[in-house]
Image (cartoon, rainbow, N blue to C red; front, side):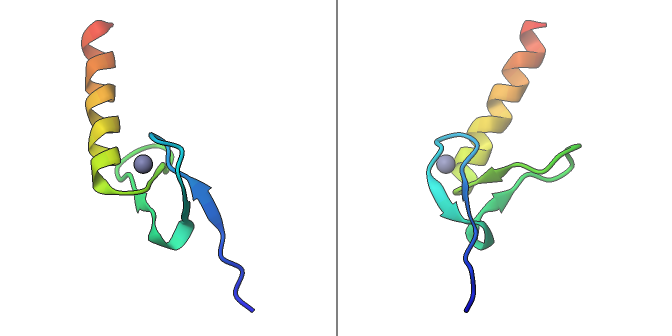
Amino acid sequence: MKDEEKIACHVCKKEIPKAAAVHSEGQEYVLHFCNVECMDYWKKEQEKKKEEE
Ligand SMILES: [Zn+2]
């Protein structure tokens, strides 16, 4: 029996199967997103933070 691991999207906190998650690339750590829209949203937030510093 296959145990489907679920994780929460980093942006919207929706629970999704880990296998279906979108992963951020080129980061020190891997983040999981339910779709590319959430990943894009997170990327934009990261850019905003950089500008504020
Ligand atoms: Zn999401």
